Length: 259
Image (cartoon, rainbow, N blue to C red; front, side, top):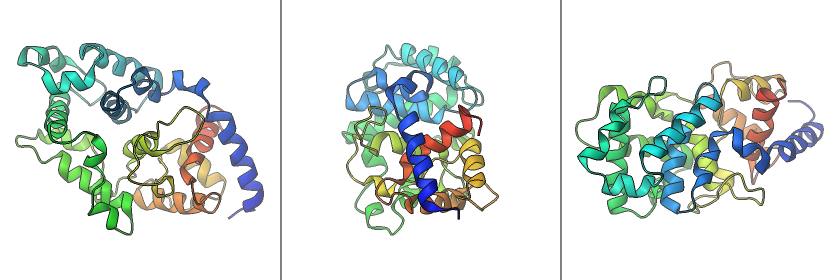
C-alpha cells in the first residue's frame, strides 16, 4: 500500500471535485434526479443503473426514452399498466437488453410494489441484515427474489448480477450507492436507511479498477466480487464510515482525467 496519508489527501480532493451536482447531467444518475416521488426515484434509478454500460450519453438517452414510454410516471405505469400499454415496450432495445427483459422487470416491479412500499425491502430484511457481510447477502437475496416469478426468460438472468456468480455487481452497487449514501452534495439520494454507508461496496468497473491498481488499492487481477471487496476494504482504511465516496474519485480520475 502507498502512503495512506498522502493517498487520502489526493482522493479526498478528487471526491470534492467530482461529487458535485454539476456532474449529474452527464451521468446516468441524472435519470432518477428527474423525479421526486420515492418509488419513481427507485424504479427510474434501477433502470438507469442496470442499463449503465457503454457510452454514458447513450445510456441516458435510452433511459429517457424508456421513461417517456412510461409517461414519465414509472411507478404508476408499473402498477397500473394495461396489456395495450406494454405493446410499445416490446420494441425497447439497449445493447443486449431487449423488450422481453423489460417486460419481466415491469412484472417484478408490479408484484413487489403491490406488497411493499419501497424497493429497499427487495434487498434488506431481517435475515440479510443479520449477516456478517450484509451487501453480499443482500445482493444474493435480491437475485433470488427478483427471479422468483414464473416464466422467467432465460436471457434475462444475465442482466442481474450476484456475488454468488462471482460478479463484481458494479451496476447494483452503484444503485445502492445512489439509494443509501447520504451527504450534502446532492448527487446520491440517501433515501434508504436500513444500512449505513459503511456497509456499501465500491462499484468496480474497468476504469475504477485500473486507477485503483495504479494507486496500490487493488492487487487482484480479475474484476470480480473478491476484487470489489478488496478495494472496499482498502478504501475503509481511508474512511471507515464512508468508503464508497471514493468511487467519485476513482471513476472521475479514470473517465474524466484519463489517469
